[in-house]
Image 1 (cartoon, one colour):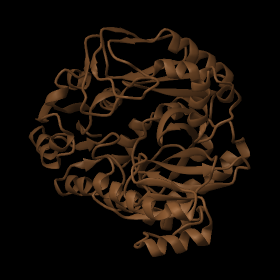
Image 2 (cartoon, one colour):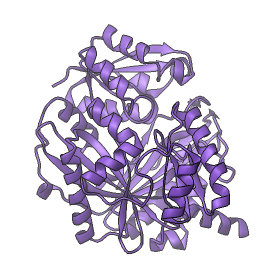
Image 3 (cartoon, one colour):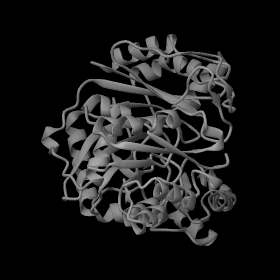
Image 4 (cartoon, one colour):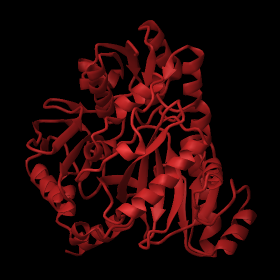
Amino acid sequence: MFKKILIANRGEIACRIIWACRELGIETVAIYSEADSDSLHVRFADDAVCIGPPPSGQSYLHIPAVISAAEIKNVDAIHPGYGFLAENAHFAEVCEACNIKFIGPTPAAIRTMGDKAQAKKAMKEAGLPLLPGSEGVVETIEDAIAIANNIGYPVIVKASAGGGGRGMRIVRNSSELSSAYQTARHEAGAAFNDPSVYIEKYLENPRHIEFQILGDTHGNVVHLGERECSIQRRHQKLIEEAPSALLNQEVRNRVGGLVAKACQEIGYVSAGTIELLFDNDCNFYFMEMNTRIQVEHPVTEMITGIDLVQAQIRIANGEPLGFSQEDVRFNGHSIECRINAEHPEKFTPSPGLITAFNLPGGPGVRIDTAAYLGYTVPPNYDSMVGKLIVHSSSRQMAIARMKRALDVMIIEGIKTTIPLHRRIMDSQDFISGNLSTRFMETFLAQQKAG
């Protein structure tokens, strides 16, 4: 087993990786920017290295600084967490060149699946259905018009190299296409240094459901069920749960089997997530693959009892999974709320000093956070300050448990999304499982109407 792992990340995911390593008896090295000198991941790691000033381009995204820290501390491996360099194929290649194990998939898999057009081609060849759309990158507006006319409106223009809602435009008629195409290309170029876009049919009220997979270096691939991620705002997930209220066991087994088979065919190694769009008749379509641990991985851990971060580490160490698909059991229901440092109605960022802090506890409650009383949330990074996760015997009981936990969760001095999550838990559409990626649009309109 590895003796020492550097964590190329910050905040709650860095702490999460530290906990996994401690249980495995592995030393950890944290990296941090000058803005994160008082972060918990710095305090709890066995060692820590400051790698630069607050801007992520000069610290967490600065590959030479990260590699230098790893070499100075003589680590065996690097865990990238999510975000930052987690899906950077070049970073994975540099790790290999420096004889440092990258805890994740191969650079080739990251590169292929990180490009949405290439990923769609690979998954189509592996047997997953796709939404009608362009075969690859759309080079000209003339091509865009021809494709849109062929598949019919509405369509969606998407950045080929990115995610998170950037470089993405919904087009409902031909008069909107030229402007949307140019805007998406401009956003994609600015955000991902790659203006490439593709076009596909837009589903009006789909559900966003993703399947967690694990693959080892011995050719074994299993799925760990699905996560419902339909509650989003501007393509950013707010609430996730497992399992989805839409899928029964027969559909879960069928789709999960297809997903695992597809990942096995492309030789995928490590943890990964296949993201799908479902309609209400359980027709599904491949959307993209995330070649890393997901923010929402705890809900899968809660219902399967499998530590996904430890699984990643063991796989990177060359160990077999140690269990088969038949060994995977799903127990109860889990829900995760992302607690962001944002105004709960205006959704504007709210960095600053935390002046009051209380975390819920009790049966079936888990908190993943790097925040604490007296901590100053910096303005330089993602606004998520923690994740509140609950688990219970049924979806109804999990909702009740989440409401109880939210009621006693206190973070003051900054604005947070805690009040928003409380209101969502009381929504009849949420309680009944009437979900789609337009849930928040409808919910906020209803709230505004009073």
